[in-house]
Length: 386
Image (cartoon, rainbow, N blue to C red):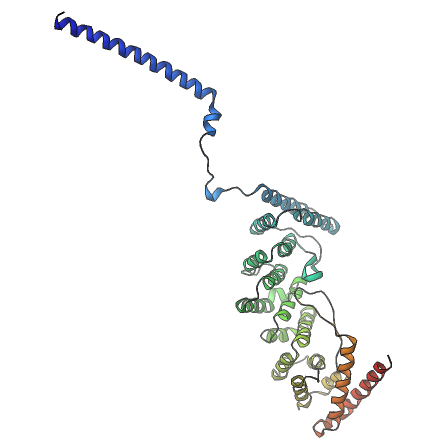
C-alpha cells in the first residue's frame, strides 16, 4: 500500500471515530437533560441552604406569641368597654404563662420596639409585691409582665424606656423594674437621676397620671435625702393637690423609714416647708424619743424661735404620731408597729414630756406639753388594763 493510500485510509477512520463520539455525547447529554427535568427537587435539596445572619427566622413559638399580642392590640383599639379589655388582657396573661420565659421575653421586646400600643380603659392598680392588677395600656401591661417573667431582661429594657420621657406610666413601671434588677451603687445613682427628672418634669406634674403619682414610691425605696428638695417643693403646690399629696406621702414614708436623716434635713432646710409648716409638724410628731438622735433633733425643732403657734398646736395634737397610711406600693411596704411597740412608744414619750416640763428651756411650751402629758397618761392607763 502506498503512503498516499494509507494516509487517506487513516483520515477516514478518524472521521468515523469523531462522528461516533459526537453521537454518543449527544445521547448522554439528552439523557442528562431528562434526568434533571424529571428529578428537580432531589437535585435542589442536595444543595445546603443557609439563612443570612440578619434574616434568621425567629422561633415559631415567638412568632405566635407576637401575633397573639398584635391580636390583643387590635381588639383593645376597637373597644371602649373596660370589661372586654380586662378579658383580653387576662386571656393574654394566661396564654403567655404557657410559654417559655425566653419566648415571652422575645415577643414582648419585639412588640415594645414596634412602638405600638392600645389603651385598656383600666386603672393603674398595684397589687401584691408591687405588680399591677390592672394596667391602663397594653404596653404598660407588657412592661409589668416582663418583670414577672425575667427581672434582668425587664431591668435592661427599662433603660430604653427611661431614655426618653414618653409616658409617665411606663416610667413608673420601668423605674420599678430597674430597681428590682439592680442594686449596685451605680444603679442607685442612675435611679436617683431618673427620679429627679420625673419629679421636675412639669408636663407630667401639670396633668399627673396615677402611674406618675405612684412612682414617688421609688424615692422612698431609695431613701436618703437627695430627693427631698424636689419632694418638699412639690408638697407646697397648693394648686396641685394630687401631686402635693403624693409628695406628702413620700416624705411621710421617708420619715418612718429614715427618721433621723429626714427630720434633720427638714430642720436645717428652713424654707423647705414654707407654707406647709403644719404638715412639717406631722413629720416631727413621728420622732421616737427613745432614740437619742431623734430626740435631739426633735428638741431643736421645738425650741426653734420661729416656730409658729399653729405648727406647735398641730404637733401637740399628734405627738407621738402613730397614724399609718397602708397601701400597696411599687417597691416599698408600710409596716405598722405591733401593739407592744406602740405601748412602749407612748410610755417613753410620756417620760420625755415629763422631763421637758421640768426643763426651763421648754417653759414657753408648758401648756401644750401639759395637753400631751394628759393624753399620754390616759393611753398608758388604758394599755395597763388590757
